[in-house]
Amino acid sequence: MAKVIIIEETTKNPITLMGQRAGVCWGANIEDPEKNYKRGLDCIISGHHRVMEYVNVEMILDGYSARVIREWYTHIGGAPTRLQASTRYIKYEDFKYVLPHTIEKAPEAKRIYEETMKTISEAAARLENECGIPREDAAMLLPLGMETRIVDKRNLRNLIEMSHQRMCTRAFWEYRELMRDLCAALKDYSEEWAYLVDNYFMPKCEVAGYCTEKKSCGRKPKKEN
Ligand SMILES: Cc1cc2nc3c(=O)[nH]c(=O)nc-3n(C[C@H](O)[C@H](O)[C@H](O)COP(=O)(O)OP(=O)(O)OC[C@H]3O[C@@H](n4cnc5c(N)ncnc54)[C@H](O)[C@@H]3O)c2cc1C
Image (cartoon, rainbow, N blue to C red; front, side):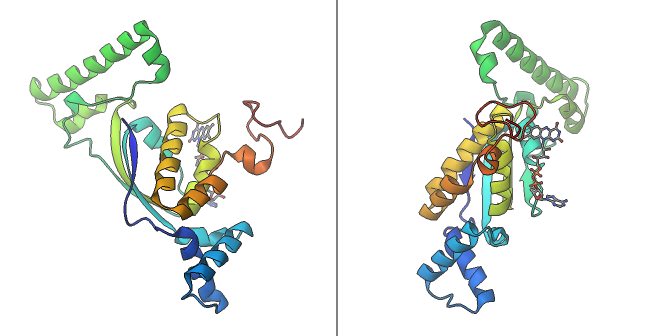
């Protein structure tokens, strides 16, 4: 099963940290954690979101498809960084893959999907073992549905922006599930994270008060309505 693992370098008390960083510039008492917490909260409620860029998030995303990770990489605000499982050194003749719910529910579709994955896997192995093709070239056959693993590092502001796009009903279902896993993992990490997730991680219609998408899911009215 796919999972999000929050690594210990992730800021444990993000609101307190934000207040501490802001306090430096205001000549405030930054030794008092309670005052830092209150100042951090004031900053984000007032919309001074630059302070969110001091909050570090490091995590492992494991078992999601290469396709959804490709979408994850489009969120470039704040210059995040990552490492991704190699396609050169891992044994890909027995790669794992994501099975979409729609396909899982339809026996014939499931049969076609699984058979195709098996064919790809066997062909990659034959290219390598029977034809002497280097693994990096046989790996060209690998599908976007294959599972991958990344180690990702970004800041709070980037993740909040991401939630606006990717918790939208229009976003790819696997990304929405990834966001759900991410929110749960962050909420587990500390109380301050639980507050931030509950109050700031939301689809863009919640922020705007109306739907900004051309094809609306109807969750919120369109602006012109
Ligand atoms: C339903 C849906 C369909 C999509 N379809 C496609 C698709 O077909 N093809 C595709 O490529 N992508 C697609 N996307 C991805 C989308 O276009 C964005 O790439 C993705 O949402 C990340 O960009 P972002 O601006 O939201 O986030 P970030 O890149 O993290 O940026 C966050 C914010 O930071 C600021 N910012 C970031 N970079 C800059 C910059 N260089 N200069 C100034 N300000 C900056 C902006 O204010 C921005 O809103 C889709 C997304 C959705 C939700």
